[in-house]
Image 1: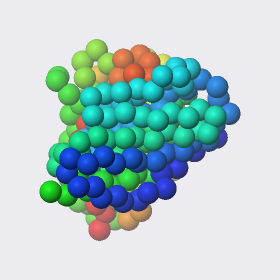
Image 2: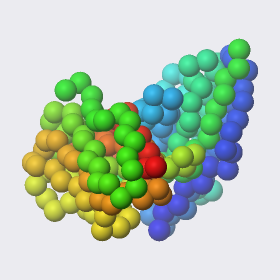
Image 3: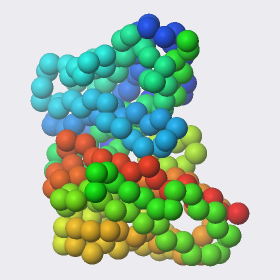
Image 4: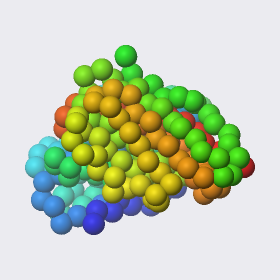
Length: 114
Length: 114
């Protein structure tokens, strides 16, 4: 079975600073996909970044980047130059190829302070 | 439509009543998913539809839960004889055939059973 663990229920960061959210997962699969989703108070889940396990290069999307450590089964999200609009719940998720089903972590609530 | 649309946005119902939740996926998305999010928790998979194939119902928590989808159009999630533990946000998402690029989520229906 696949499990995803986010050990930080809540974090705070000052505006313009950098914060890292942790995620670990457990799987026996060799190929898979990892995602970070953002959920603001509007409840809609918004895709932040996606990583394919067979790619060694860490994914980057503007201010968002990941540190993917396959051997350690770790997938952390770094947010640079934090903005007030980054305040939200962040969920780490795992998906097997062709399986079309996410396994989500329990989330990290991020507060960006002015 | 431009996004995944869910209705109602909020629903309060009395224990023991039946409820129907509706999801309009993005046009052209063959795959449709229902997830449940209890307060302060991550998303739990409920059911997955892919075109005209038999749905994956492996996440439905009890026989009080059922869902239908006609072709690649609207889906309804029905909960019969609601219980207080059914209180949650029910999120729908859709994707092209393979969801490994990530889904597009709706804003969910918040169900409160009193």
